[in-house]
Picture 1: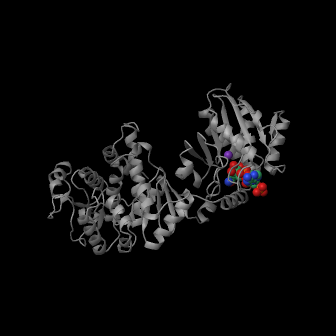
Picture 2: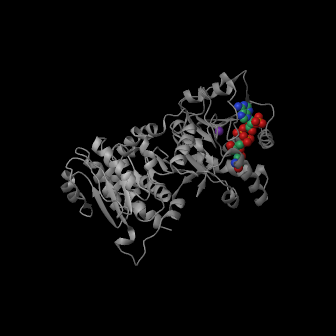
Picture 3: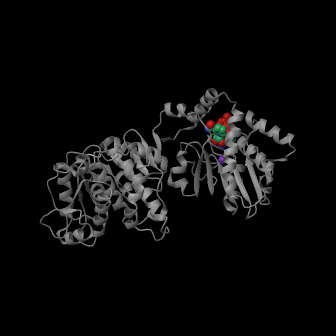
Length: 503
Ligand SMILES: NC(=O)C1=CN([C@@H]2O[C@H](COP(=O)(O)OP(=O)(O)OC[C@H]3O[C@@H](n4cnc5c(N)ncnc54)[C@H](OP(=O)(O)O)[C@@H]3O)[C@@H](O)[C@H]2O)[C@@H](O)CC1
Ligand SMILES: [K+]
């Protein structure tokens, strides 16, 4: 399980690691730098390419100096800069500075007086080691100007630990800049700003570089932020028992679809069946029943009186209920949903138009059963909780919302965030090919299916989001981001589940 920590916690882990492994901080820095160097090599085209390594005067800069030293030792063409934002350098920076001097490697000092003399060409490589997790106030103007030059250049940029200018636990000040890195090599654990859309969209990718921090210390340190990787998902997954039958895996009900929107409920239904539920009933407009039976013979259609939209049914016989995909917002549907919410006696899943109806009738919020899962995309989320100034404020607002109404919110994004009253779980799987109509319907089907199989609501949400993204990643192996469809995601669910059973 990957935990996400703040700067103070990272510094503490650093100290505990030094203590438990009997190593010096310089040795840990050397380990980190060598691992980052190794991860950088695939991005370097040749030993002749110009590599500019920009180092601050703290430990992030110390990493930069060590990386530069080893690159030079490996025969790369490197120019090393000391970005002197302060006269007092950290002791490990100084030790690395001494090593460079002893090796007669020139260190170019950059200050407010000469920062605009730096020349970066299109095919060069930039290594950004100016600030890491220690940034605690806006960068000095001359550093911001230097960063602006990086961002304007077409050179490939590798940031060490964190793109300089980003704060670990708060938004960047209005108008401030940060390094828009092509890749960020971050040490041991993911960093929160890399997972949030307003920064993350400018950072093409990040890689987690293990540096051997003490596992026991990571385990003991508490956090409210997690990164959901395969190891995390495997722990949540409940293997099927040999002596079991369809009753063991629950009876789910999906409610959705209106004329013209039948595809949504069909996709959700197939995803539910492919995610292991014992039995699936579907309430869709009567006019869609034939389509359902043709598309998915495993599902049962519920009889009701309305031809063109959903109405009401007895809920207590189902182990889980998922409502909303393609239902529209007609008065009849609003009335049916209001009745559903009052009748439901266990956590349900609400998506799409169910969320829009609730946003327009906020009085319904208090009727939603405790621990129900809401799966909004950014637009739906804004309608539910109101707007936000930045992503950190968004997280705070989601948290007060889930605490006030006892709910679980799945905020869909590149790194979808599952928020419970106690913690945030950021998903690691998925790709831009999944940002398409139908993809959310598939997610609703998966989570409703897991809910019926007796997963807790939180675990159903975390595992469902992980599997959905993983299936999308497998589907991409035979598709492109442009061609990937929601049906492809459903078709790859089998491969995604097989990863969880592969212990
Ligand atoms: N986690 C780990 O285990 C390992 C971590 N390692 C590396 O250490 C990095 C963290 O190093 P770091 O703590 O020295 O902080 P860093 O980001 O270099 O900043 C330097 C100093 O600048 C200052 N400062 C802040 N804002 C400022 C501003 N606007 N303008 C001017 N000054 C400002 C502030 O000091 P202050 O002035 O507040 O006293 C701050 O301390 C980490 O990202 C990783 O690369 C690895 O080596 C090995 C293992
Ligand atoms: K950096």
